[in-house]
Length: 211
Image 1 (cartoon, one colour):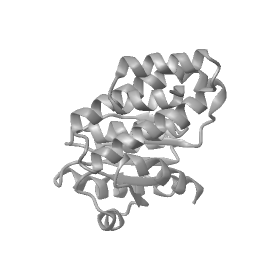
Image 2 (cartoon, one colour; image 1 turned 30 degrees about the vertical axis):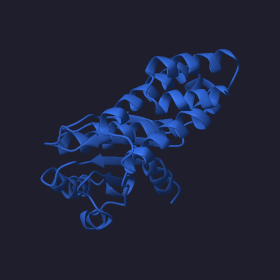
Image 3 (cartoon, one colour; image 1 turned 180 degrees about the horizontal axis):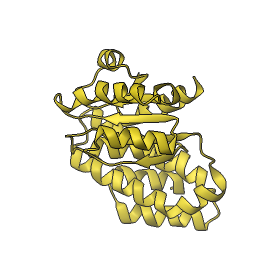
Image 4 (tube, one colour; image 1 turned 180 degrees about the vertical axis):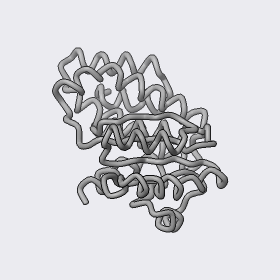
């Protein structure tokens, strides 16, 4: 079996130790870190996402595969940072105030970072004031906001309004996502775009930066 296929198979199967070992083998064998990432790890986690959406994989399995992806990327992180992939832009990501769900946000963060973007993850339950202040100091190209509850998604328009008040709205693109959020709600809340899942988030970020 080709080493890239081996990495993908072990990632899809949630074999964390196997992914780390196979990534290390590919790296030590001279395979460029970008090739390991873009042709093995990313396709593997995309397949996991497809299986989850099709109902053929479940949340615990997806979480294990996401951890395998994270540890696989860690094996080549220094190479990615030094040579292979230059930053395509800077993204700030956070789960809004009152919301402590981080699985979806973590998957989105993983996909965005894997796609070559510089990423700052603020974590969960982040107050609006902190988000606005961090946008001011970090100057990201894109602010990605996650909300997993119908109650907490109401924070999104408040954050966007706070960015306007601070004179920052025209300096950052806002991408939103989460189970209760729709494209229509994203538009109504004043966001620039919406991503329904982690697989499309990186493409949405690139589109916002290019646009």
